[in-house]
Image 1 (cartoon, rainbow over the protein chains, first blue to last red):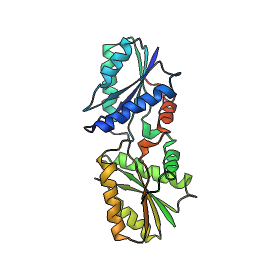
Image 2 (image 1 turned 120 degrees about the horizontal axis):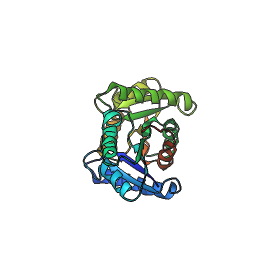
Image 3 (image 1 turned 120 degrees about the vertical axis):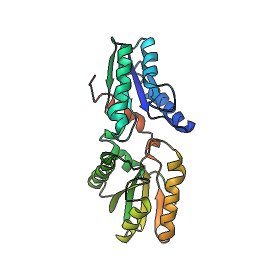
Image 4 (image 1 turned 180 degrees about the horizontal axis):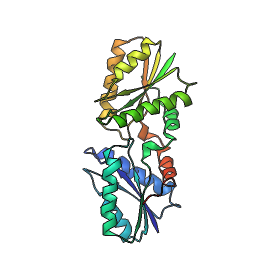
Length: 124
Length: 124
């Protein structure tokens, strides 16, 4: 059994955190065949934390956990903080395979996505 | 003549700001046929500011300026700060058409992009 954890920064604005929850829900309907469990986690401010979300997935039976940093740039959070959180979870669950994907902003498709948005709105 | 301005937050990490410059460069090669001018701007910390970047585009001849908020969630920056910056630029250049697109994170393709990244890396 495998799991995907979307790891976002976390915000004091509840609406921003809700966007992440909704993304996880959208992924569950779109990517449900590739992952048995899809969840969200927050690095700061909001909950669950990344180790806690991984823990829940492991409790549910996950033996292969993929963490996706939902960040646009490769700052300290992506370079150090998220790997540190995953390392913490790895120590708690040494038998579980844990991986981290490239961060969202590194996807080459971002440029195409930007261009697609330029045709969407038209408010002055 | 039209222009696209990618409006990012701006970071104290120069490497993060450089990612935005590189995105604008990538867009110039991919979207050069849709926009006569593609530039970047920062809301805070780094330069150029959004009004300054719009000003440069207008000086270059742009009569139609599209600003894309390069943000993942609809926080205060997207809801208020970027519109305020555009309004400032609009007062400086009343004859120029200025529009703002939906913010990056609102694109429905984000979920698909996330799933595509889960197959990319494999480091433990």
